Length: 64
Image 1: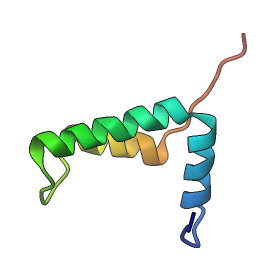
Image 2: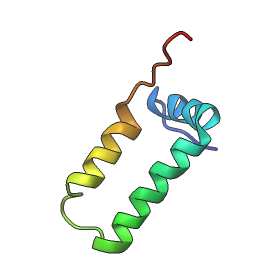
Image 3: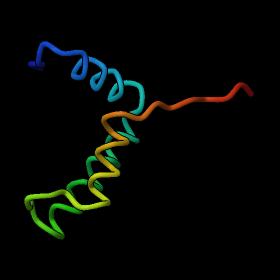
Image 4: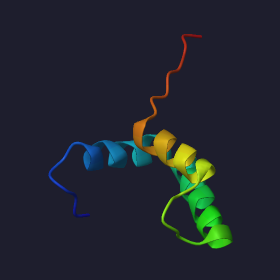
């Protein structure tokens, strides 16, 4: 799979490998919002929140 020469793409790929269900749900949610509202000049609050989580979130697992 081609990637850009930036750390974002390899880390996103690692996210897909480590959290496939979460990444799939994020993509499904994004696609549902696009199907409902189309692609406009802005994403809207829900798509912005999904994108921010998808692109920038860190998942921490507390010790058991």
